Length: 270
Image (tube, rainbow, N blue to C red):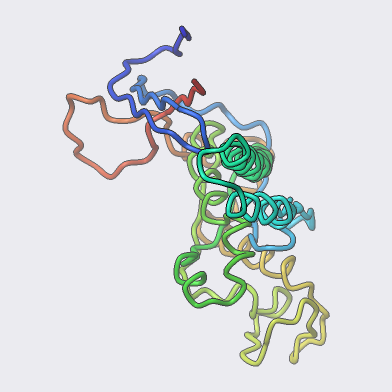
């Protein structure tokens, strides 16, 4: 098999087997490039979750495909079939192949949703406020662990961060303890008694909030405080060149400052 690589210097290849297929992941270095000049100066915030997968400050809801949940019936069926069949028989070998196919579909549906949502957000916004979540800790806590793992929120946030360098989007990350869901986006009062309600009224001003949209608007305000009000100017002069630069330290070079982007990787199915 041959495949032409993009312009750059290949320096590392990782070959592994996953879900019944072999994959070659080729990491290569390319010269730093300047992000494109953004024509619009829009500032947004995005709240990630389980259902929906993400909500931005404009009120747009991005739905979660729930890939694992929709495939559980087939997974259980073929796992039971493998246990019942005689080891080494044709039917016994068929079950792992069916399981691998289901797992590949689950991974593909989840990754496709993440790529579509992350690309839409970084293209839409010049500056984007996001959350800092301890996903591993949330899963260990046991509260909706299966749904959290199925949503893959950590993967979505990572894709938003590295794609921001491609489109010149500036990312503002909130502190882990920032009360984006509990704070009222209208008056700023924090509702410490808020539970898991999807709709709740502010005890101070009485505004009824959608939990996810309210969190996204608070993240938008946080991003505005971080970059200043000039980001909303339509002339394109504010924050020119302020985004991260795509590219990475060459294999033979020493890193002298924190990394701002990740190595570009090309994954090929063999």
